[in-house]
Image 1 (cartoon, rainbow, N blue to C red):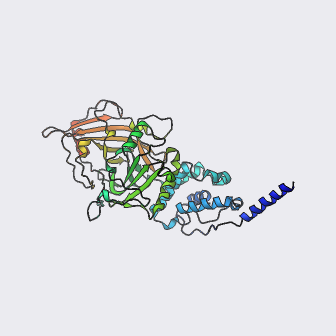
Image 2: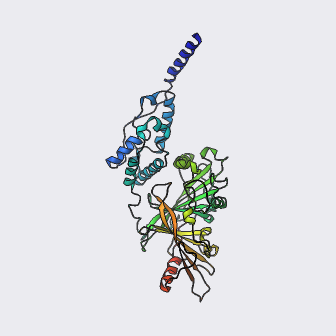
Length: 451
């Protein structure tokens, strides 16, 4: 009994002494809160401010060491990523981006942290509260600016950037100058920030996607996510405008074991300037991708006909082009894309190898017509759009609606035009005048600007 008593006294003494090992956790008032309706602020204050603000919302049991140490770490990490007490000082676009990311974290079940809500059930976000945030953000409530006066050519006055001389990211990830030749994995129409995305993959990634071998992605897989601002053309369609950035992910489980197995990099502008101030920018990448940890930290649903047991990891619907087509455009390179908001469709222009030879090595986004040579074939694939299950405010291809082919014939022979509906394996009859208009439309689509 004496031994048990001594042990009890020792444990209590150590516990009491530990309470004095309490690193500071600064608290303070909200200085620049986001400007939002009261119902939106209520949701944020109730469900997010405990960790993502400077205000003190600690329960009594949060202040007991050693639990306090874990709470302190979580709060400091949360504030660094998103602080609702200071977010109002940022540009409006950055504020919206922060809210969109928060909504995605919530709808994917990553936030609030399950371990936090286990002890703080009041912080759980109800479906009604999530709907309130989504309604406020309204990602499809605005129209991109008109293309008039907007140039896709944003390269430095000194000339085109030398892709082989682009500086590595601050974490040491080297830029890959061959990204422009990689094949398409998917496309994204982003209503949250009015941008388009091409998601390209190297040979390893493309092979893995076509086989459904993405759980996890094999080492050596590389992705390039290319972004453009959206502009509204004179035709009423929304096209790629100014080049924004390219993000690259490189899979190497051993080399990047501390960053979820991926190397991360982002280069912005036509001069491809590395993103961030130092190597800590990677924390933004890993924390943003955390909700899709079960998909190997990849948001994209590759367009692939492969079958897997997992749900929402491949986009089989978009890959379901009619069998028996004269060409397989999904195996070609992408030239540009556009969306039609009225019909809720997304279209991508693909080109075979002969067509890609006519695309300038530096696609400047000018209005000049590309001079495709004999043997070049263009394919315009149109899909209906659906909401991206991994990102609120984004849409991705769904059901194929039509496939149009234009083949460049020898001089003196009319270029060939074929139209396939989304389900028919044979070309559909098209009025001669309509076919002529469609040929002209396809041939005059401007390639998306690239560095």
